[in-house]
Amino acid sequence: MNIESTKTAVSNSQKAVYDFLMDLNNVESLLPEGKFTEWKGSYDECSFKMMGFNLTLKKDSSVPHNEIKLISKEDSPIDFDLNIYIDQTGENSSEAYLICEARVNTFLKMMIEKPLTTLFNHMSEKLSRVSL
Image (cartoon, rainbow, N blue to C red; front, top):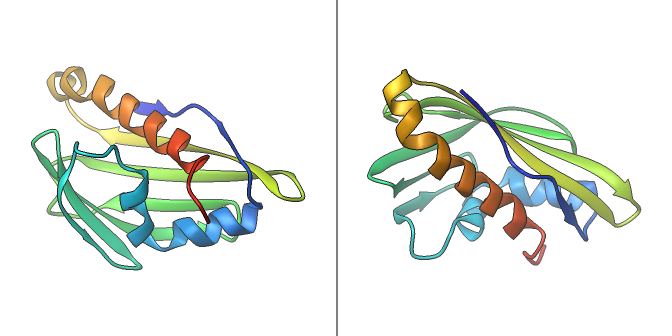
């Protein structure tokens, strides 16, 4: 199952957005308020509980200033990759979006596709409003 968020204009340079997102502590500021619990974060990984699932993400790889690839840890109930893309659109402006590739069965896909799409769209949109 692949989910792509909407592309969001960000009033910061590609490098500033990339540097912000490389610290996974900052993921918390992109999540919907009141919709997650048990947040734990560090520079390289984060975990939280949402929709009844404990989700743990860790950095896997990156392309400086353009892409950050996060993967779910072994203890996450959903096996997925979350790629964050940042494109430069001007001197102090960029565009960001997320693509999730989840390896789930058909039943689980029906349960989580809509909530995850909403979550990733929210995270993308919130990035446009965060102070970097």
